[in-house]
Length: 488
Ligand code: GLC
Image 1: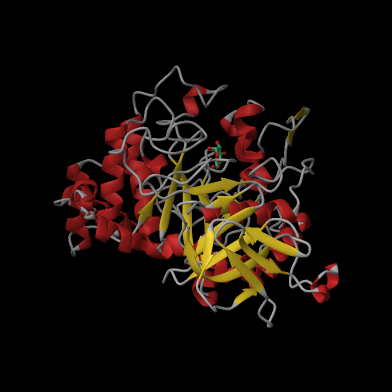
Image 2: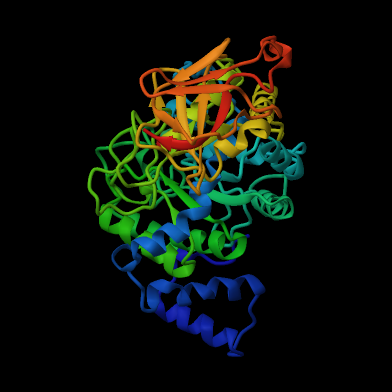
């Protein structure tokens, strides 16, 4: 609900609002009072510079839950789920992503707004969504509070272009999700687009190519100060997200100093907040890591890819779709197999990264069945093998050959050798030295396995006959051997 335009707020108006909020003349609604809090946001008070002044220890402590978590759910949901890849006669190609339809199909703002007037996700069930994430073994959820199309999934007082004011649904989607995440013990995080194709002071005037690298809106600073920051205030203060995951930072209007300012602005509001590197201009292409060490942001964001090796410092999270699109597209059936998704999670974990795996719910609120099935498979695998993934550290040599990945328990007592294929009668590995007389187990199997070690031949672990049949194995896709020992 919008009660006054922040765009036009001058210092004098803010002072007069504060005056009337304190019992001054004139009547005022509750929303106006809330809007007037903009005057007391950290921008106006002394700001701590977290980029310069946070120690490595402080940073590590802040990032600990996130690094331990390893696996999260990305949710791309918004108006684009209604056209689902087709606007009038214009059908997106397989390589065109669903949430970009406003730009790709060159839809004018007013025409795209018609989708907002239809958005009524009556099947949205926050409880079920969180259950699906939790059963998949995911520890956090990152949902699009606002994507590039500018539509907000929460009740924003700064804008009418949101689920409460513009759509028939009239329920706060993020509120329901925040409540359920709390109830079920999942950590809530928000994706937020800096680029905004709907706002007149941002990219809307760039139509028919909202996403342009040539033009720059001279009023962009106003959008940042009077719209984007106040919306972020609402999100941080009212929904308490643990991560803000920015995107759309590549537009010419956005600069690294603005990114650093935004980073500090938010950290001053909520010091424990974690913010990705797309807050500034630091990342290099889709590989997603930073060009310069002093770039803003707490973690790198490889997109649709996994780092070749380990990161030499910056924590990272690989975000990925299960088919080829982030936002729902009815014709995209190019699903990755559950096996590939498990293998990706293992590969990423061995390199010390996180996996942020996307779902694109339909316009009515239903999560596509192929996504639900794959997530359930991953959950089954993690039920057996989770201790080799969560809270683990990586080894210097995180892999051996093409099919073995290693992780290590946080106390460094155990090494997990994860085989990406069934090993047959015996597993032979060269990089690990087992502790004398220690037990070696396959996760999910009670009885310890027989093994021998020889300095030249390495470690050989025997797999008994009774485990050879598919149905007798503890899981599918990848098999973990828990070894008390050290890296060679
Ligand atoms: C790209 C796309 C965006 C998507 C994001 C996810 O930046 O522009 O649509 O949300 O990737 O990482």
